[in-house]
Picture 1 (spheres, rainbow, N blue to C red):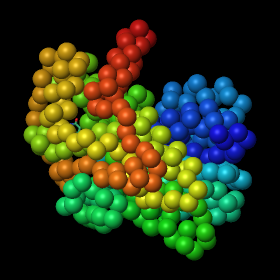
Picture 2 (picture 1 turned 90 degrees about the vertical axis):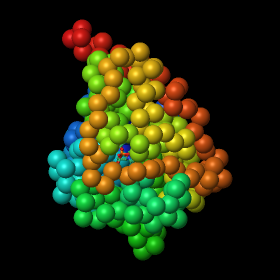
Picture 3 (picture 1 turned 90 degrees about the horizontal axis):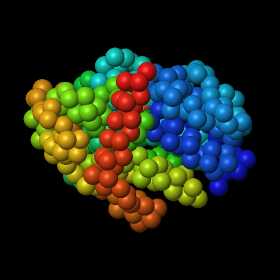
Picture 4 (picture 1 turned 180 degrees about the horizontal axis):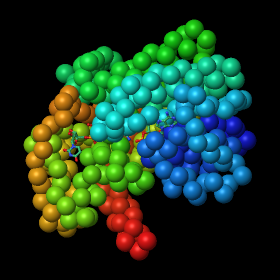
Length: 319
Ligand code: NAD
Ligand code: UDP
């Protein structure tokens, strides 16, 4: 429990950040959420705004962090979907670097423990499979995804330098593809795209023939992993948190069509540049050091996600 703890969450109005805020409020904390609503939505935190323990600041992690003191800072502010990076590549990199720097400076001043939402993208298009935390990665540093990948890599560097130089307590999670309720239907990531299109009777767009693989983690499993690391007395990470069951994107498309009963079918589109060919986390560290492993497999997670998006579509029809 976190009764009375003062906690800052950046990116708290997003898909994952709002789930973190929910759990922190349930544990009795005072939560300040800073989010510029670039990809997050007020709707995700509407139910929390009524709580006297929850404060929302519409602001940028690069310029608008409130002064502490805070016991913990959870840093989730960043664009998170590949189609969003080219909209503002310079901003994508700087949100991660300057935002992380701001968070760590604030933590240094007030003694807060810092959680960093890093990513499997630090491994780039990986030559080691499954990906272990010791793998240094294969990122094309001048490609169109590099603004995100290198931004997250530099953010990890900042975390470890602040720990070594100033003793800031850090907890770094490398998140593998996570999905679930509250994803923005227009976010552009594969699970939301497929489910939204299948429910609307539009064809699912398969990039590059769908032979590339991903391993999909349900949101609630991921958040449990976050809290286990954050609550650990000493472990810094970086630690992989994700579901190690691997699927081709075509398999995912077929499953979504089957589960929604949709006849909308598939169309092929070109593979985006530098799109990783395979991805699957090695979660031995999470299993051994945190006693964590995912409980919700793809079919069950998709059932909940499809039900969520069906509800959103029904609400939109009524409005
Ligand atoms: P999301 O887009 O729903 O959440 C990101 C949030 O950050 C949004 O609310 C957005 O408005 C906010 N934000 C963006 N720029 C900001 C800025 N300059 N200042 C303040 N707020 C800003 O995406 P998500 O999936 O919830 O991702 C949360 C974090 O987890 C991100 O850092 C992302 O890189 C990381 N991550 C997510 C996944 C995944 O599969 N969901 C995988 C790897 C890493
Ligand atoms: N993808 C797809 N159709 C879509 C969206 C994505 O085929 O409508 C593919 C994409 O090319 C990638 C995989 O699905 O290979 C996962 O994409 P996503 O954007 O969800 O995340 P990534 O793992 O690439 O960051």
